[in-house]
Each structure stands twice: as C-alpha cells, then as structure tokens.
Length: 438
Ligand SMILES: [Zn+2]
Image (cartoon, rainbow, N blue to C red; front, top):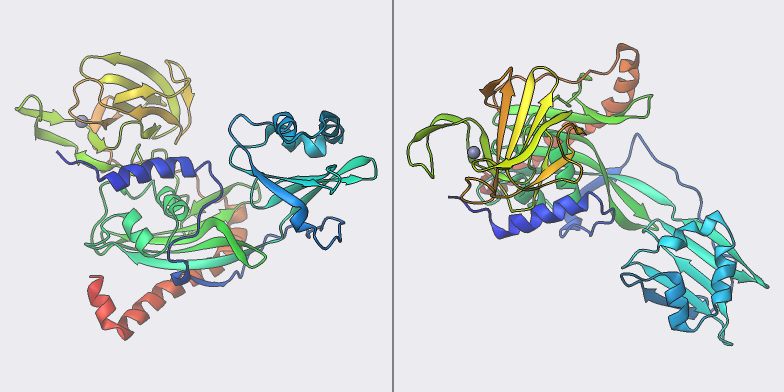
C-alpha cells in the first residue's frame, strides 16, 4: 500500500487553509521569478492619506502589541491601565471604527501614549493593505482609514515535471512559485487534468500571474492571468476573463469555459491509490472483485468536495462503506463518496450542494485499510470511469461579449506564448540545463 509522504500531508493541510488566508510569505527563490510590467489591467487604489502628525519622534511613540486569542480592546485597555472612558470615546466615533470590535489574534495593535501617560493614538491593521488610525484631536478622537497604494506586476514562470519533481507541487516549488499560486493552478485546470493521476515526466506548464506590491515591497501574489499546461502530450490553455457581468472565470483562447459539470478529483492534493478496474484483486477479500470507483489516498481530515452541483440523496453509515455521501446531479448523474471520517457541517439528506463545496472529510470508516476516499461516478445508474467518461461543459462566452473577450485576453495569450518560446530558446543556449530536466 502506498503511503503519502509526510511533507505532502502537511502541504495538503496548509493548502486547504491557505484559501482563507490572504497573506502569503515570499516564495523561497523570489529572485528567480521573472517579471515584466503589466500591460493590460492595472487596478488603481486611492492615494495614501498620511496621518496629520509631524512630530519627529512619531514612530518612536508607538508601542506595538500582539493581539492574543480572546483579546478585545476593553481587556487590553484594562491591562495597560488606560481609562475605559477613552475606549468609549473611540467607539463613539461611529461605523468607521467598527473594525475595532473584532480585532484578530496574531495581528498588531499600535498604542501611542503621551509623555504624561495620556492615550493619543491607536492603530490597527486587519491586513497588509489597510490600517485604521485613531488620533486624539484636542478633547476628541478622530479616525482615519489608510490604504496602501498598491501596484500590480505581472510575473511569469515555466516548470517541468520530471524525476526530481514528479508532482505539480514539487515542480512549482522548484520554480519558486508560492503555495497559493500552485493551488490556484490546480484549480484552473481541475476540470481537464487530474493532478492525482495524470502527471507524467515531461509535462510542463507556463503561467502569468499578478504580484501585488506596495512601496516597492512585495505583499503577496494575486491571481493567475493565463496559464498553459502540457499534459501527456495534450496542451491546455486557460485565460482569465472578467465579463461585463463582473464574473471572473477561466476560458480557453476561443472563449469556451474550462468549467465543466464535474471536477475530476474530489480531493485536491491526494494521489490515486487504486484505479477504476473491473477485474481487481481485492486487498481485503483476496479475490477478484470489480473496483467500480477510484481511491484517493490522503491524510485523514482532508476535505472532500462535491464533484458537481447537486443534492444529497444519502448521508449515513454502514458496515462496508463507513460514513458515506451520495449526491444526485439532475436526473442522469450520481456520485458517491465513501469511508469518510465525518460529514461536513449541514450535510444531510436533501441538502443542496454546490460544486467544490466540502461535503465531508477523508477517513477510513467501513472496510478500509488506510485513510482514503473511494469515489464512484454513475451515469443513469451504471458505474463509469470518471476519468474516461465524457463530461458536459459549461456555457461559452456569449456571442455579444466575444469581441470584448478577445480585446482583454489577446495580450495575455501573446505574453504566454512568448514565455513558452523563451523557455525553448534558453534551453538551446544551455544544453546542460535542458539535459538535467529531461
Ligand atoms: Zn475503493
């Protein structure tokens, strides 16, 4: 039985949490990531408004406190011996300071106290881009919101899957990409490529993505703008497009949606431990029994997502399947998810689910030798191999919007083609590098 490497298990957990976390650390090899100024889309943010304070030792008067779990401002004021009346005055400023009611553990709170011990300022940054500054003005307090002036830079990178880096994650890390960008890439192509099953040596990818800077310093990665993935000899290309309706999605260069009715892998960052095989020797029963699904080995607790929009028709437990969920997708399609450690919150018979929604967590309940998801895909009641069955596609760009689509995406696609060309050229110049990555 294959065990998933420990590092990957940690990564799976980290990646799941990264969705919610906005701030990412700099990639380890940031200098290797190539950049050029963005050509198409620049998001303009309001100018910085500096707080109206000119004192020379302005910064030295601030004390930064780290907010502890369970902290709130009244506890902190008490601890520092600051009058509760001051806090009341600050709260009374109004909705501008509403953010101070739910200060987050781990963030910093700045307190500025005069030589006489009087509170003269308070500041809080809920994220890297925004700071709320409250300052005493005579006998009252005033609030100011400061937003960093950000700049979007387009970065690009190419990478190849090979013996040393046999997975999307490892190839991406070697190329200096952040976990956030690697995860985004897996989501862009999740309808067409199984990153759990389909990775081959020689597969390669190229991508353009945003990096967000403020004051010349990189804050975090933005979104993937365009990407191509050459997988088992087949090239897939995706470009990001924001339609007139404001909805952002990824499309092929012809404006076809990459989105399909079903996602290939209902567990991200797992690996396939047993394929769809109608003549498999069963690992527990030691005889030939059809394996009418796909097994994804992953750490216990890894989220299992709905492969498509649908309704929960069964969410219960039995001896063989353990805790399992059956989803009905319209009249024709059914998907099954077995051996869960637990159901996700709110998942019970009759619950409507959206594609990508977490329905449960990987476990080993029922007849299972190790934590994995057993996934089945049925068309009109017949088990089918989810990797080979033809899947219905989402709607393409409407005819009315196709010229807008071309205007906004052609530049990105040219840049994408250019960086792929560049990779080939660089290889010609350094044959030893080309040899190393084959
Ligand atoms: Zn199975």
